[in-house]
Image 1: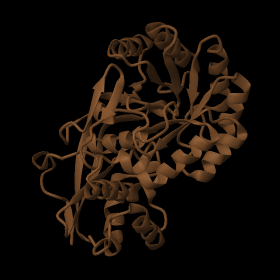
Image 2: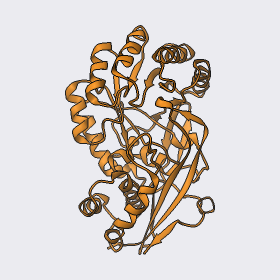
Image 3: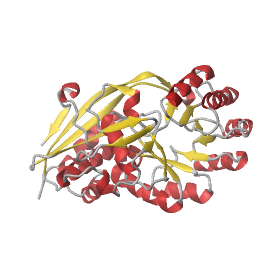
Image 4: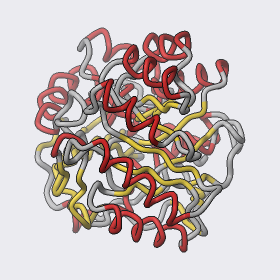
Length: 368
């Protein structure tokens, strides 16, 4: 039996290439990411990552560190192969803190797939969606600048565009942003406006009605599923839920209300690949389109979400996000390829990542 001998943890700042403005005056410039490596007595290691944004979801990087220390007594000496068994033990030992567990879970899946000598997607459902459609996330700024970003993405082959809204709390300005991006990319591409919970129900309805003649989608305008449902039913525009769906129960609630045309399945929001795979399978059963992604991250998180998406039924994936494309430094050699608006993972064992230790530097701490 393979056993875990060591857990190493790094903390590294991921710098956004451009200021990333969101609703409510929030901005991402530099976000700390926690990198985890789990070593075994078989000489195989697995890599994981979580990069929480505390003003976006209830999670923060410095909360990951003590949580991993707390879980160490369960991890050291445990069998890592078949991650869900060990994750159940961790759930009993430490209730909640799913974002911290996400990095551990990803590392366990990387390790398990390496032990099997297979790319991770083979263990999650096999090769089902070889070419993953990418979306371009557009920072909330002047409509003209946002249109230019959209045009650049379109020229790169991208056909799905997330338009960040609400940075100035002006719904009329948000309408102009959506109109500018739609005009920039023409008819056909998917354009969806994201308020990240910060719009009032009234403002979201007014904006939605003003956009009713455009082929657009709304994303999480309000904080609750109930308010998003009112916006969905009042405007008639399709709705993507994100922050408000974070487990099986909330997904079922959104589905039962009829306001969840698509759902954002973020790895750290659910607790890693294991929990997100269960959410994925539910969405397949109820017919909800999926965006498989995470809050932020480097090549490690990006590879993890792409392997899960690759193992998902063709046509069920609305899009994925190439998170590593938005930040620096680059932490690993290529574990996936991007071409003409689509991404594909490699057939290297596990996640296919080999992080640059020279970039990571010395670990923050090591538990053995």
